[in-house]
Image (tube, rainbow, N blue to C red; front, top):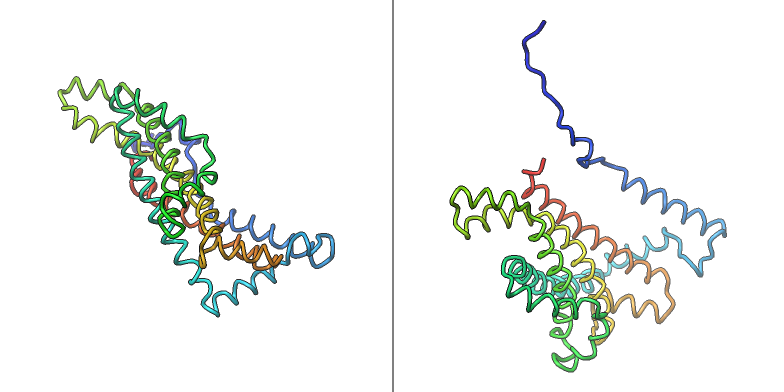
Length: 264
């Protein structure tokens, strides 16, 4: 018999998600091919859905004329500034709620009151407060990303294993060390998961904000295309938004793989 030790597989390994490359892309390709076939054969009316090939041609024209970046850069700037303000404030508030009972007692009812309000309904109010320019757009996106980030963050802090905290206390770790070495790393997976929802909400509010008083931006582009019933341009704008969502989700996934490698 060989004395070479054998690796024992981790029991829960079957529940660990594995990266399977190419499946997501294949789903998109098949779906687009079906729509292309349906629109060419008349099974799908061109008044309902445009041909994907026509949308691709419109997208190519956007790139060649430079209009893509004229609309993309303002949108990216608004999304970045507004989301950075809302998410940073939301993470800070969520951590404070999770750590301090007095802050929880004061903040949770306020967040619960703000969370269900449709933020788009507040856009006219923000225009009155901050003007029709960039300030109202930043404020709308910041508020829209703030509330889900707060909820995700303090929920993640609450879900940190209390046994680990008690273990740290038994070893004589200071309060700050427990927060820095146990609470924050333990809450990070939940916080990053919440960011996916927050940024998705930020993209939705970005479009709404740009449909009011914006000359350039993806929302302004979609509004103009819709008013002209130009389905190719309208769906090109939708594709851009979809790509922006996939890109931000991919960036968060990349961050998760780097900072949460200890979960493997």
